[in-house]
Length: 54
View (cartoon, one colour):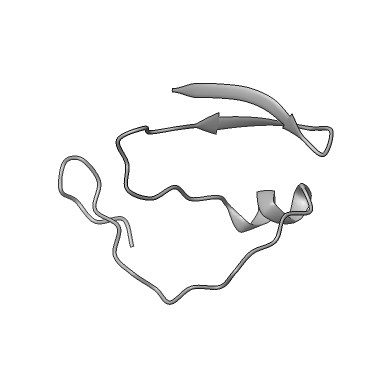
């Protein structure tokens, strides 16, 4: 699902996978919209075709 909106008056496009177990936000975007980040330990991300991203 593609959602277009604004966060802190900045235009953003969000791709939302309603069946995903996790969602991710680019740290540069979080900074741009003055969002807070919580550093997490690294972990592998497996996508639908079973390939790993990280």
